[in-house]
Amino acid sequence: MSDAETLRIYDDKAADYAAQNQDYLSQDPRLHSFITACPTAGRVLDLGCGPGTSAAVMAAAGLQADAMDASSEMVTLANAQEGVSAWQATFSEISGTARYDGIWANFSLLHAPRADFPKHLAQIKQCLKPGGVFYIALKLGKGEARDALGRLYTYFEEDDLKDQLMTAGFTVGDCAYGESKGLDGTMARWISVACHG
Image: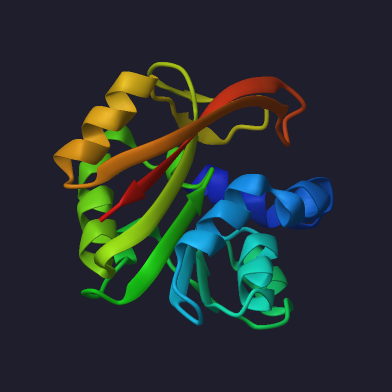
């Protein structure tokens, strides 16, 4: 993510975001499925980690939890979490080959421009070890738009998202669906997809 306005909003509202999502993220059944799918003591990346809540749950479960976010305030919060190593970086700075057993991208890549999405998926695929686990969650819809707070979103329909994942070389597995209230106070439909590299 490199949209300056989106980053400014996350920097300004980092504490609010952390307070709103703390309980849900720490008990998210999708996160616990991701942890179970990773090998014991495996190395994982929380991509677009926000306040690091998910990465902290991974670390508490015995995984080596790396975390990255483009928001400096979110990185500060993430580094305060026990067992989490976080740094500031954009999606275009994802690098490495066969480095991670799992990558968790929970409502983060939805801030990437659509034109950059295939490139980011290719980088993620390269960073995963063969057979590694990749979880992605996005809001359902079409096009690109800013929400009531001014954050830039790219929306995907289910078939489009699955096509993008398969084109990048992922094996698409289980999907979960839901609707929840975001930081802007509006309800939004979403999809989460479990993949293997």
